[in-house]
Length: 333
Image 1 (tube, helix red, strand yellow):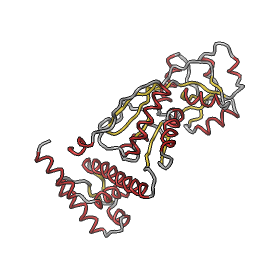
Image 2: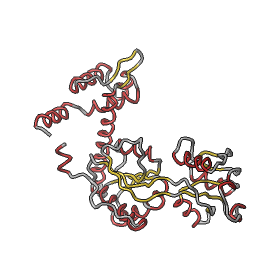
Image 3: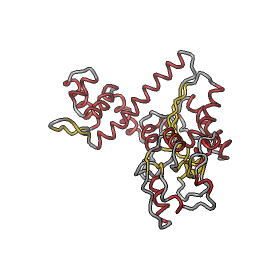
Image 4: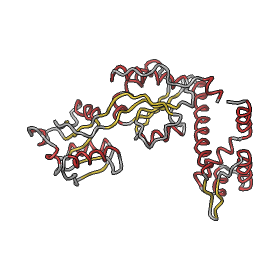
């Protein structure tokens, strides 16, 4: 990075105000300068001046002025994304300082998709809490798309999930942990459990609980039948809510498609049973995902090490020793 570029970046940082970041966020939410100003408890002229000053510093127009509101330009979309991340980081910094002031070790936010959320994360969280009982851990179980959006916004320190071709991989570090096979699950005592040499053809006419249309697993589940020259089942319930799935299985003859790790957990507790059939619609590997452009807090680094140790213990996968950016490299950018 040249001296002029570095000086320009510091000039922009010095000129951009926190209230301008708050205004960008409010404008993105409200789509109107009057409502955004009201949310921030300022006058509309003051909000307009803040926005104009920011556009002058950056040398671009951030919002199109429309008859009934404002719409972000491409420049605006970029700034809004970074404003949200910066505000989230400031909020987390305040919470971290308050935690340390009150004698707590700090806090960490982790996201995971369902299977590693049931197998990997409990082991990692238990290990961390045994060492630091006062550490506040926030765990979110969601789809990879939702988690990636939250990690981009700075609302998560790290996540365990998947990356697909459509995901923005800039400033992302991904370390694969394990593939995720899927299986068919039914209630204990289901008639299909008594069949010899169960085939996919035997599952065409049964009722299924499946992920929503448009999801990767739903698409592959449908392809599985089509590739065998079979009709795709039409008696469907669409949901990802596991509590609903297990309850429906227990009181019906429905079949559900679930990650094998999740199914084994329910089987071990007598909640349901796995059908003796191999399904050709497994998911890609999931992995540990962190940001390369942000520093982790000491608490987050502790959790990161615990997840890596749990991955070694449970899946036999040794992840890299260093997964966080060096502090001096961040400062130089």
